[in-house]
Length: 240
Ligand SMILES: NC(=O)c1ccc[n+]([C@@H]2O[C@H](COP(=O)([O-])OP(=O)(O)OC[C@H]3O[C@@H](n4cnc5c(N)ncnc54)[C@H](OP(=O)(O)O)[C@@H]3O)[C@@H](O)[C@H]2O)c1
Image (cartoon, rainbow, N blue to C red):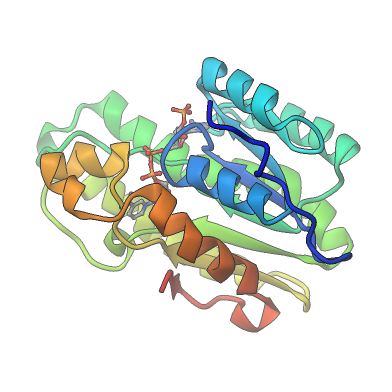
């Protein structure tokens, strides 16, 4: 566990935001935890790896909050949302980051269970989180929803058809959601770029090493995420 003594600074009054991030145990989610907390924001996160969630809880402490939740389970997300909405209130920035990718294979060689898992996490997981957290945000007509998409949500490649299917779905689902929100809120699909994470290693192998680390990415991405506002509602964005 890294030294967290510098992880929380004091932003000017009124600037600290409650940021909910799914999939915080590694990769982009883990790097965003460090960066949002370092900038003085309150992070609420989840993932399935109990050991890492325990380390995050111990390392960051209150007011940050980390829970073991499988976003693919509507009942787990429902219970988590009830607790978080009581302890923290609704998120001001909701980042649907958790996702999984199929092992590289032609579509007809992807086993049914693996295809289902990609759909369950990447599409249904996002809908589960929206179902249980968004009502509190809509009630106060405030908050930003960022659904992590991909370059493979706007283009395609061989051997990642299940993943492409889910990220194209995220683009459509998010833009439709944007049309349902009250003024003052926003929902956007976000292509984070190409970053050296476990997911990228699964798809690219060692070639992933030529891309930026999640920590480097987060330095640029977190300020970008904090700038997303109602003016962006429904716009497909790319971290730049
Ligand atoms: N890396 C890239 O170049 C790239 C490019 C385009 C888009 N993206 C998108 O960016 C996001 C983050 O990707 P990444 O590269 O950081 O992936 P990653 O390294 O594989 O990390 C994925 C995170 O999601 C969590 N997760 C997976 N299934 C979950 C579930 N059912 N419930 C809760 N948490 C779950 C994982 O934690 P547990 O295993 O502990 O649950 C992990 O913390 C994804 O949406 C991905 O599609 C990444």
